[in-house]
Length: 215
Image 1 (cartoon, rainbow, N blue to C red):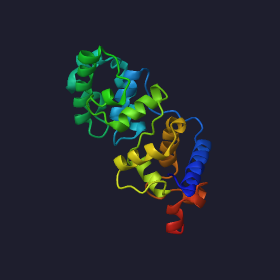
Image 2 (cartoon, rainbow, N blue to C red):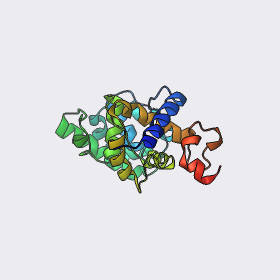
Image 3 (cartoon, one colour):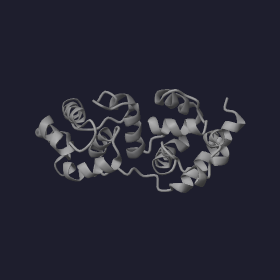
C-alpha cells in the first residue's frame, strides 16, 4: 500500500519534471536500433556528449552487427578510445555483434530477458533500449535515478538494484517510459550530484533533502 504522502510526492515529481523537460527524448546519437543499443552500452559511466562525439565517426562504419564483426575488437577500440573503459566496451561490443549475428540473425531481441543475454547489457540498459524503441513502460534505474529518488525520499534504498525493485511497485506503467527521461534530465541538468540547484527547484517543498539540509 502506498501512503498518501508518497502518492503526493510522486504526483509532484511527475508534474514538475514533465513540465521542465517536456520532450523526453534520448540525447544519444543513432540512426537505427542497433546503433542505439551500442550507444547505450557505450554510455555506461560516460556522458552522452562523449559518446555522441565518438559515434559521429564510429557510426559511419558501424551500421549492422556484421560491420562490428568485420571491424574486430582492435578497430572498435580505435573509434571509441575517448570514452571511459573503452577496452572493455570494445570487447563486449564485438562479442555482442557476434552473438546478434549468430544467434539472432542480426535482429535485436525485444524482451528484457533476451536483451540481458547480450554482453555488457544489464537490466538498466535493456529497459532504456525498450523504452526508447518500443515506448515500453519501464523506468530504467541507474545510480543517478537512484540518487534522485532517494533525495526526495520517494524510496529509501541502498543501491540502484533496490531502487529498481521498489520503483516497479510504486510507479504506474503509464508514466514509466516518460518518467525515465524526465528524471534523467532532472539529475543531469538540475539535481546534480554536487551543488544541486535546490534554490530554484519547484520540488523543494516536498523534498526531504532540501528540508534536511536547510538549504
